[in-house]
Image 1 (cartoon, rainbow, N blue to C red):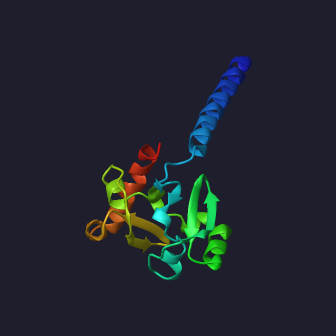
Image 2: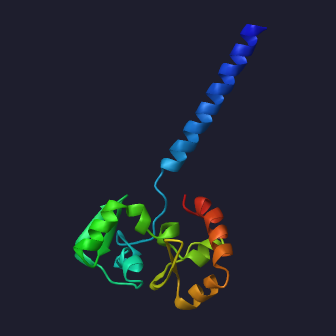
Image 3: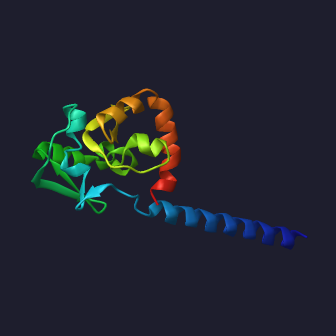
Length: 153
């Protein structure tokens, strides 16, 4: 009986470990990123949204490649801030329209239709759509966070 229990425990352990390994492999896949010719945020500086609270066009001569995407910056200081903590400055939902993701779809963005909420950057299709998204920001974030994993595959 004792040997049988040990076999069951080992089987359970290995099943759990295989399942955990599969989950880690799945999460290790790169998420879908909204790119225009390999460039994220249509060439806008991701750090400027936080430091200047505005959309600022980046300069192609000041760029960084991160996870297969190119990010442009308006100055070297913003590039260095990004390099120090890229995940802090990257847009949510791969840079797709936050309102669309909250509603279960992917849509392009207008880089000037943005909002920073709880130190996270959200982009939208247009300023009108951003206004609709702002009517229920917290609900839209919950829905977007729920929908993004299946949309980003």
